[in-house]
View 1 (cartoon, rainbow, N blue to C red):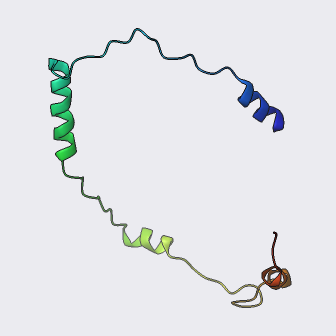
View 2 (view 1 turned 135 degrees about the vertical axis):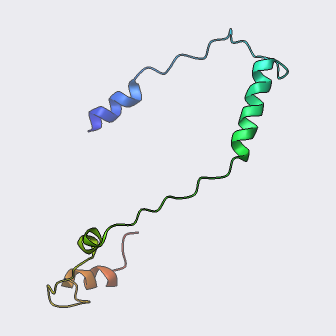
Length: 90
């Protein structure tokens, strides 16, 4: 695991961005269209959640069936009490 961490840290960094990028003007037709579409998308209402009801047979399968086990509710192994009463790490 330590070797993987060392390998990940020592891998080559990505190349720097190219310096010959062209920045378009905000008044170009493509930029204006992109702004118009982005504005329309942001004004769209959020879709309503779709609820699917299960049939009665499927609903019965999903119910949790509890069974009695262990020493009863609220009983924890003795180590839990020792851990809770210890001061912890400092």
